[in-house]
Amino acid sequence: EALGQYDIYRSFIELLEPDRKLYLAINDKVYAGLFSLKAIQMIRRRYEIALVVVKIETEEVIEWID
Image (cartoon, rainbow, N blue to C red; front, side, top):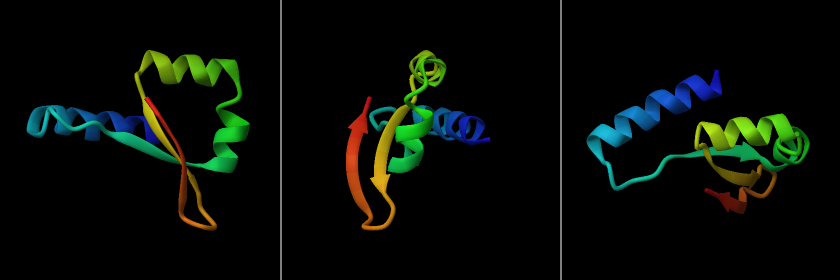
């Protein structure tokens, strides 16, 4: 579901504001678990999904990933 929404938002941004880049925000714990899987990393690269990893408890940005 998140991938579909991300793709729709990215399409609109490319049309309306092509100089901007869309990032998908993700919880640091989910990133550490799910994105450590090689298959998920391959999918993220294939679809060119940029991420911003956030520590939810403190609302702190941990990492920006292009």
